Image (spheres, helix red, strand yellow):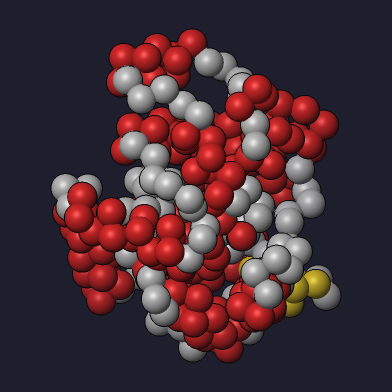
Length: 263
């Protein structure tokens, strides 16, 4: 693998061993990488206005049996905000604190590597390769949601396995920029193994990240359980109101995960 080097006898990633300036330059990449990021960003913004494409993606998930019916767009939007504030952000802060890594700087590197991954927390508006890039740039709390989501695309799982293989072999076109972010040198090999097992059996246990002191909080545990899978997220969205004023009032009033809506 090219993402790590020896430091005092132990393998350290570039994220752990290089200077901030070096990591920023690596995350930005060269002209070709920057052009690719801007193109993906433009296509994602256009997708916000293309209800036909979003409906087609959700229909594929229905056909695969991962969702039974589609929530309203507002339910998905506010459900994604709850997933972000009650699981994704607190879990990341907790994890990076334990790793001795600045959460803010880590998020900056992620934005520099691929700005799209930060503006679409559900992934429904992202391209196939944006979702794959996100899975490979972040040591996931639990990657099963993303492996279910990528099935919006007919070749999603196959392509994820191919690109994860490239990351392990050090031949991926984004190996340099992703390598500036990922802090676990064993992550891509572990991800690749899981993707291969998942393609054989979608019910295989996922590699859940263990370093979470937040699991002492029952409210966080309920949120993690609810949002861990795509069906769990969709079921949560269905439990939300459909009126924008009601959803907005609820969002402003809620300061912790509503356990009564847990999956």
